[in-house]
Length: 118
Image 1 (cartoon, rainbow, N blue to C red):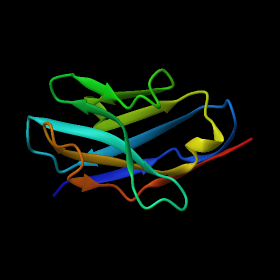
Image 2 (spheres, rainbow, N blue to C red):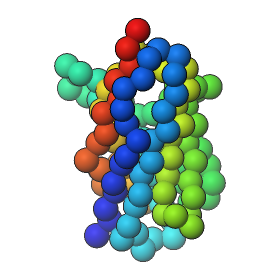
Image 3 (cartoon, rainbow, N blue to C red):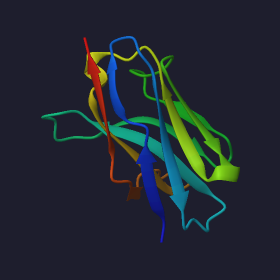
């Protein structure tokens, strides 16, 4: 059973940076996808931010491109999301997700809170 544990959330001022980590376990497939989503306060939907696949392909949502970077460390079974130049509108609960290649949000972590103050 795949398990995802996020960490690294917190409070930061506008323009600051945070690096989120997602430690994963229980994965047996050699063809996988992992991603980051977020849910802003008061919003029902969760929006996708970035994905990384086992073949090395990476994609970003337009609204975070150039500010957020997804990466992986297979030796540590960890996926990261480096977030720079944070804005108050980035305030949200951030979730790590995983799935088979091309389907990146089958399994969800518990989420980690990010708060950006102006």
